[in-house]
Image 1 (cartoon, rainbow, N blue to C red):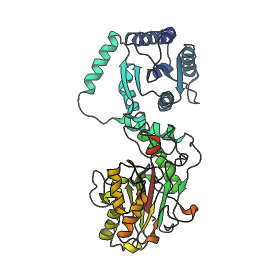
Image 2: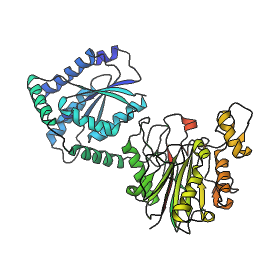
Image 3: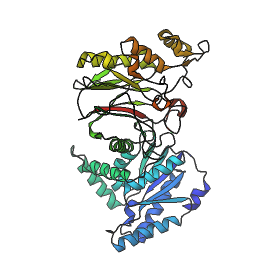
Image 4: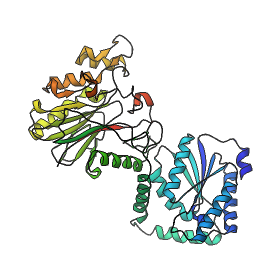
Length: 449
């Protein structure tokens, strides 16, 4: 196998993962050799080239019987003797698979093949769905089976098609993955939360996240990424762990957390009413409920009325700004909870500044109509646009007092939370700077119990 792998050029975008987890327990030399032969044959016949990984259990726990531990060590030693093969071993399958994912990401691999026994195919698929997003493309290929195993497989498939059933494995797998992720160290330093002096800490719990203190390791997502999608490499389990760490540091319950479902529009969800499929604003008067707005250049806005004890959040990109999402949230607070617009406080979080954000001239014209100072270099094909300035102008026009708006116009640098996300790569994520696989920070707020 080593010679075959060495003779073919390795593709930086493909890999072959060989699942040998089941061979870590009481494996015979004959079975081990046969499995290796089968895998070599499949790799050769299918012209599978790339980075090869064998996964096997190290079994170094106190509960592991001595003989099983020796068997596992024997397998690991044998695999390490093969050139061009890297052994990935761990005490749990979740840990091993996550380690493989890290190695794939380090090598820029997005497409790979998994060789495995038919008995493990269903289980491994469930693990894969928890660890890998649709950003990756993978195929599970079964190893050859004996006549006896084919009969067993046919019988098993017949039983599995008998009818719908609750799969107890998924919950167990999710728990195993969660426990493993909780054990990982934080990256990029301690978790840091930015807070506004405008919002009372006696009534509200709030903050804006930075990119430190999480477990996301992909450079553009590291380390406190708080959003997962099919276009990104962070699976939901990693984002959930990042949120758990944030909740612990900030003091809110992650099970009572609601983040905006972005649509780059101006719809607002009033909590207690039916939830829309998408919305860029959210308001509530329920205590202990944390609402949040994501951002990675778009403005995360927090709203607070200390008199009526109402809070809200909004996601305001350039389209949402033009559509008036900030005033849509203010309007919802006034109409739904009888807030006085003069009591409403608004804080603009980290977002892309006019130093780094440009739009085509046709779009920039709309900001010029709001206020000429919102656009710089107006005569150029792609003028620089100040979405924060536009937001302030619209809020003030809607009746929010100028002193109740906190943005980058504050004179004290220590009070400025509206830093440019693109200009601060060590603090914030930025779509403008990082491209499509960008991370997400949030602004969050809740009414204290």
